[in-house]
Image (cartoon, rainbow, N blue to C red; front, side, top):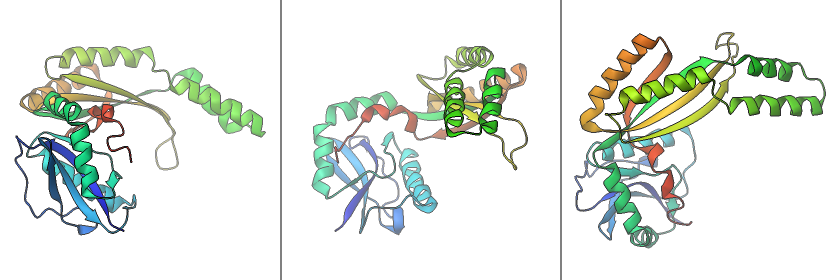
Length: 247
């Protein structure tokens, strides 16, 4: 039985579609379905796609191609339906919400900043305790203590983030924060554990260069370890879409 893989959603009235011969997952042709003033990029597959790296990359590339031509709502990998009517029903039933979200995302891309910080002394101690546990109970207690500590961002990093947001305030419209926790060192990663946090900014395309310039200046002045990425499709600003198709 065939399934339909969804890549992204866009406004039909503002559609500026990419090459009609785009190939998606498994090399299948990507085409568009329309309903209620909205469009969806879709490809037909024989079976649900696996999460192997090649499929994930092609899926992301299709979304990026559409994003380069117009505002889109990117979907997470694995959004599939049984038939085309189910896609049209989803566009119809969620039309108002999707149109409003597209309007708020119009002309914007996502910029990401990842910051590496020192692990707090208490967390370093928890890591040490976790490594030296002997019984199952001790291990679980140490594991809980370790993960409790990873939820908290040191005040030094919090202050840097607030300073950075203030410097960038005129260049973005929305912001998201993600605490990635402590990144454990390993044989090929050096000997030091690090705390990693990710910041995501919704940036109008006309402000991308200014955003990057301010970031580089801030990085130089504040001497922090950080990495800038983007512009990307706005994956981290569409989580409110929820279970669109209720599949």
